[in-house]
Image 1 (cartoon, helix red, strand yellow):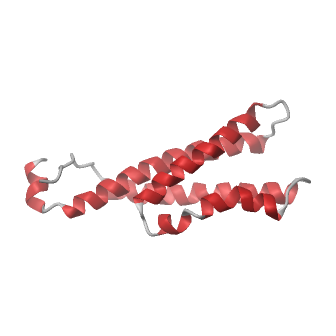
Image 2: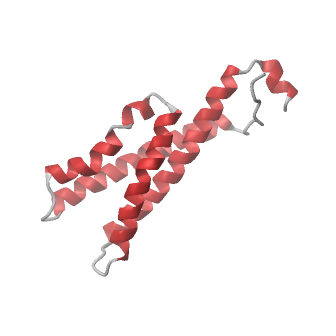
Image 3: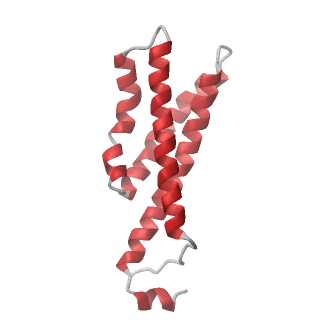
Length: 136
């Protein structure tokens, strides 16, 4: 007998909001990388690739709504978090460094919750209605 989870209220609404929030924050983070590489003297296409490719590699799985891709995004974002904290704590930090930190934290939280909601949504579809009603 499969494990039955307690249903999450308004799961589909939360899931739609989580996916939309994740994609908006994801796009903003990639836009920030592009802005840095256009506006800074040290910016280049190679630097932009090193910043963006780890995130872009997970985008196809996220587009297919694979919860494992969202989970892997959380792990990848931990490296960005370390770098963002380091950049925001130096004496020459700018507004964009703080924005970078805020985007990484917000994207991590949105991605983590979306991964959970996607997993729960997919597991609920595997159960038959009688099992769900018995455990509500």
